[in-house]
Image 1 (cartoon, rainbow, N blue to C red):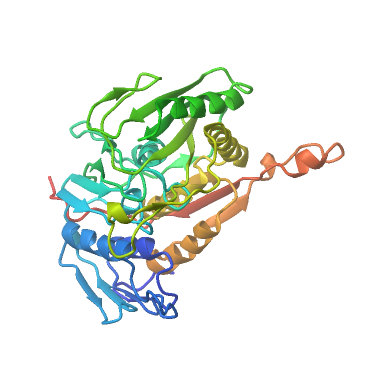
Image 2: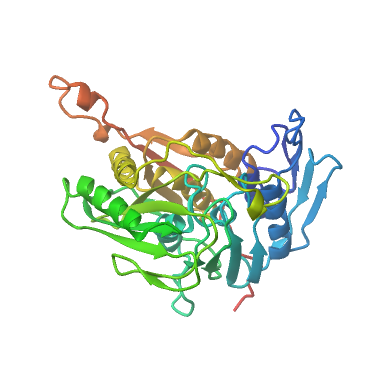
Amino acid sequence: MTTPKFRTLKFTDGATQFRLRLTTSLLSHRPLLLTNIRSDDLDAPGLHEHEASFLRLIDRMTNGTKIEINATGTQLRFKPGVLLGGSVEHDCPIGEDARSVSWYLEDNAVGSEPLELTLNGITDGTSDVDPSADYLSASFLPLYIKFGLGSNDDLPPPSIRVARRGAAPLGQGKVHFYCPIVKELNPIDLVEFGKVKRVRGNAISCRIPPSSAARVAHSAKGVMHRLLPDVWIHTDVHSSSGKRQKGVGGIVGGGCGPSPGLSVILTATTTEGICLSAECSMSHNVDSNRHGVQKQQQQIERKKIELPEDLGKRSATMLLHEIFCGGCVDTNAQTFALLMMCLTPEDVSRIRLGPLSSYSVVSLRLFKEAFGVEFKLRVDEETKSGDDSDEDDEDSMRSRTVLCSCLGVGYRNMARAST
């Protein structure tokens, strides 16, 4: 079944999947209408600050985009334009309810020119709601390359570089993102997981003693060394001033924002080139003014703070859980991989995923409505335990993977000049 072109995508459930729906509208060239955006919220109805900021970023990255918002902000009408690329710098909102700069990067698309995007804002400390730039670099960039982005030898591969750290909620960090142009994507066949051969990680600290990052790394390595010897976790220490300070693991960090932060990211690489990542961070407990971040009005609440050792163990446990799921991408990257599969040429793409998250399930419905792409989902019975007679409680909990396959829509970057 072919979806009629230019038919408006209408959703009445407000800001659900706000960013993904806008990205899908851009890629499918179909107008978008969102209604009932927090219409029941009497205190803060309509679009939030980070959502309005994302709309401003899209407006700067495209040509011909039309955005209409009603007086209360509870209805959005979006008519997509053409993605241009080029050099863009954007200031992301900061504050208690602000999102990380990675929230603006997750579903970025390609344009007619190489995209050089600089985002200023929060870079760390929001792993419970948003992945960090380090996570995108470890988990999403390998997927970019597998889909053919950066396969041209004339252009450098896609990259994400953190120029300055900025922990939540006050941010003041800076991230550089580069994405080359591509005419069309490559179909993928990611079904072989392989065996885990190494684990790499990075413990990041801002405005806290350097020993905290070392304690996180030591605790995480203590868990991973029980399973394999090739484990290496660097410590990336950033002082409050602009001076550069050498970390315990050899990484040299510069200055950072005014907020303290501690986080860790771990990445496991298999023999088949699969990269699985997990990250966690110390929750920030600075209560800032809602209408403006003013340093003199900040109040530090004494809460139960997680020890660095517990943070390291939690990150290692999260990585082991991703490996246990058996997918060729980690849970947070499922939706991105499925979106890219929709855009591949009219050929079959396959990928092995762990248990589908609820967000991925809702995204499959969105892709079917926007692109007309239906995925074939099949539970791989080979990942079940082999001997049912000897099956115990541990074997019965063994994760089963899902094989996802689809036929791409043959998306081509028509904005790119023909050669």
